[in-house]
Image: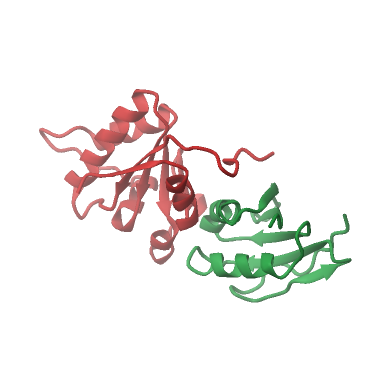
Length: 130
Length: 97
């Protein structure tokens, strides 16, 4: 059974790029805050985690991201996934960190460049909260 | 359509493609990642005739997601995606152009 996009299909997905984790928690939090909003609004939502951000898709990866004045990252992450959103982990970034498929939390999966490029080529919009 | 399975988890980058009646070819991608996968996939599909099928045996997690995407972008038809007991995916692609 193939549930992948058909050739020539149009993607209305929103892809939020998150390249930070514990190295810069605030940048991770604001990205997930935006993605959470999109997912709750019912929009097709993906957070594309790269570099240190890939740890967010592993067990305990969002632990400790509580900071006064900022939303809770574990809660935002849960909002994304529970509302149908996906968290994509860059395969180039997971490999050197020894993150494997069996270590991922619900809603996370490892993808490569072609998956992202196809979505964007089909119309997906990428947003970066730099 | 005839199909012949050859080999299993090869080392990354090894080629073990064999034709079976000119209709179906299996290529073991091993653990190739998204950096090397596109060129390998394109080369394999260019090596068969339009209408023939290449079965890509893929172990690398990102390539399981990427191979169908990349084949569609090349204009080919993804026929099926099946997971094996060992976790590898067999992605059957028909050369369409």
